[in-house]
Amino acid sequence: MNVHPSRRTVLAALAAACMAPAAFGQAAAAQPIRLALIEAFSGAFANTGEAVWRNVLMAAERVNARGGVPLPGGARPLEIVRYDSAGQAEQALALLRAAIDSGARVIMQGNSSAVAAALMQAVERHNARQPDKRVVFLNYAATEPAFTNEQCNFWHFRFDAHTDMRLAALMEQIEADAALKSIYLIGQDYSFGRGVLEGAQALLAKRRPDVTIAGRELHPIGRVKDFLPYMARIKASGAGAVLTGNWGNDLTLLIRAASEAGFDGRFYTFYANALGAPAAIGAAGVGRVFAVADWMPNVPTTESAAFYQAFRQRWPEPQDDYVHLRMQLMIEALAQAMQRAGSADDARAIALALEGADVSLAGRRGFMRAADHQFQQPLVVGLMQRQGEEGVPFDVEGSGYGFRIVRDISAEAAAMPHTCNMSRPKT
Image (tube, rainbow, N blue to C red):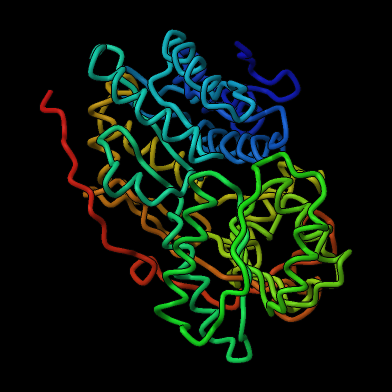
């Protein structure tokens, strides 16, 4: 098993010492609250794991700078420990056991719905068998809708908008594109990628029946090195736009191939707003590439700008510029829940308190829906533009390109009905 706190970054509890020495001095004497982050820190999607790490570390530092989590007997600092799954479900399951044995009662993961599904089932089985060592599972990126619908369980909490919520937000923009006549659907061949394509096809039939689906294609996840053959088919189809849920290198390479192939249609994406994608597509993406997210740096408020600038001060390297507000809200919600529960070790008490979590940061508010454990928050759709153009004070990763907010959808408008019938433990 590859279990390693990063040697090049400092544990959240120690990093906070430089931010608030007096408060930290009190918190450091207490036993840290260990949070296990199970992610891909190596392999094809290592960049996505590192992006998560930076966000949750900064969020933990913020909590620790306030003195830690107030609990009976004294405040305790947060400590985040990295577990490298390399994006593999079997490895993640082995690391889950290692994390629990090390004392972690909070598990965090998100980059891969396949891994998340395995962890959800394993956590539920473990909690039933070992009630004295129960854990909660915080999911910040696995967007399979079933996780908060027919597969929901009490120990799982999702802090990202699920696939259908993100698609509905993108569909608002597609509905406004009267010139669009045909669209190509392409995605990664696993549960999430298939879900995006199926959901998109259903929504297009309902909300843009005049738009022809020029093609629908799945490709192996994390294994395609050259997307030019795919882009050749897309271009030959005559599609005026591409819709994709691709992420990580699969998105970057796809967009780079589009530029090389001379494809001049629009891209409707889940994740084109960072991780190398803006630089890869370059000027060809201006006015053509859309992305949906819970937040983007160019949300036009002073609170949002201040939050983003604080992140850039903490992580000044251009390649580290991928900010996930939802992950920072997740840590705030966890700290709030632990304080309300009066415990950092009783997973049931923490889960019950998380059901009432209501947190704000950077002028944005999110709250947990108790019925299905789906976090409710605003969503935005951004359009790629050059930095310095109206509405684009900030670029992405030093690329010279950023995303102008074209739609800001309230949490209430972004909410969707659910089919969750959750069973809650009585003790």
